[in-house]
Image 1: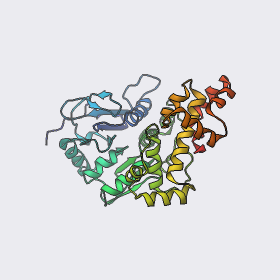
Image 2: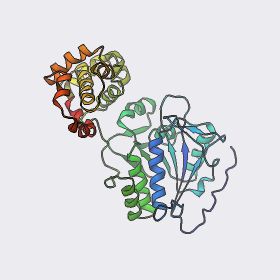
Image 3: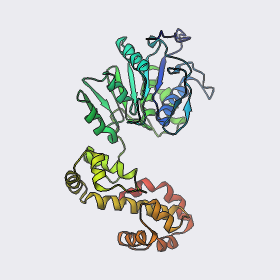
Image 4: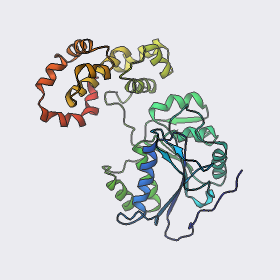
Length: 350
């Protein structure tokens, strides 16, 4: 294994929190950016962004930029640094099943850090990277409800938890990702720098207030809180495939169920079958587009996964009691701006 460099300036007495970052191939940019910005805002007074109270290093192997899932490239500032120079090493995951997320050198580095007792943080699907390295065996880990079944299928020695934003299991810390990463970062800032620094970071980032480790992950609004992981996963797949709806067989496969199991779970938990649920989701999305856009009805029909405007209008009238063109005429232009921000709540119409 390659020799590690040393972390410059780690003896500075005022530094209270040091985090090293490893970025997976096709990592999630949001999770990385809110983590590092929470540290940045806590590290200095005002808007100077100096690494005083907090320090961070983005590391990599091979000297190459790392591509985020959105296509943006981030160039690591250094190779792999001595893990003893950090309070935490955070692995930022991203897309699963897109080839290796990190290389063998980075994986060996994580094992060495674990052997030295350095706490490891798995953000988003970074938990899968830690699990594949054998670093979560016998542990609980926090994953997004959307990846709960993926974790169960791949690992039998890891207990996934999907009812919270992040989870601290000793020297292993895992997060579901997304905006919840800011809450995890703020918890670390609170622990090492202080509560006022953590609140400052979240205030500047326009988060209402710090959310605790046990705070629930947001779910699609129409789902009951007791919805099973399989139903949640299926609904997540539906939401990601509104314009080109999947067949029920494919949907069941993606949820890890048979078609019969999927139908039974939906009828038991949601009171309707998966096909009806899917159709209502697409109609509600179309209704939102009618409210907030100037697209033609034909364009909206295509975006909501309907064959043509006539079919969309027919199903729309059945669902909402009027044609989309009538709704558009009835709504004043002054109402549309507010409805744009209301779309997540409007999902309750499904």
